[in-house]
Length: 340
Ligand code: SF4
Image 1 (tube, rainbow, N blue to C red):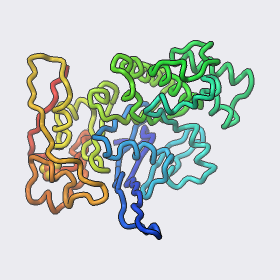
Image 2: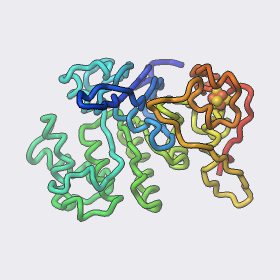
Image 3: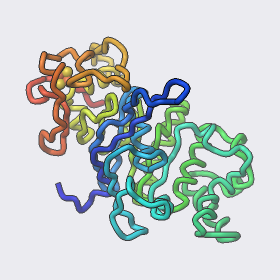
């Protein structure tokens, strides 16, 4: 793998939240929300990050942007505006402010992520003000361009978020994320709060903007069919760790991790003759405060053997950028999802 086209390289990323108890608020345990994530994202690609709720995918996205402070790890990012590679995890406050221009986020909930007291023009134009990029007429012109890019009209500038539908509000969120001409956008479940009919419109918008502005996406979602539609590669997360990562067709056609197989068995397929038996995962996701020994997935895995209870599998490359964290990845014959 050449490192030339890698925009973001994450190594050993951890985010642990302390659990405090008692009068003295002593730390009695750690919630290991993200527990050693390794992944890279290439320029211009979309990496989907998928898993059940509580698996740590949103925390991973926010730690990468340093919206929350990572506990450990490296986040190496090739910043165009700074003209060099930066470790986001160790960046100073000043460097971080400069990096904000390169790395942006689209939030999940278009209802609560927009300030109801600000007009759309102020919301979309705010980053331009904060970073001293444009003021007055110039700023207004730029906001107009951004609204046009996301399919909104210039006269929408004067309106307030409550006057818009869910899909339109998410378009406003996208316009705000684009304002600083970023390289990387973390899209944190950007369509999961929207009606299914609107989801496709927003996904198509994100795809066309990617081509137009040369964007790179980390696309966080719990819905595998959405991730399959938009991603070049997909990472599957379980209990704070990536358990499988591969090119989208490879992951869906040749899954190598039993958790991926179980997740995919729940994906609806548009073929009446395709009769797949859904794999029901027994038990709840274990607590990230006290994860199981060995392979974190072993209490729910249909293929677990003794070694799985005691030894943690290594996250390894099986070739062609197919990474997996399972002792038996080479031996198991897991069920793919047929392509529609
Ligand atoms: Fe299942 Fe064992 Fe593989 Fe873990 S290492 S996924 S328990 S087979």
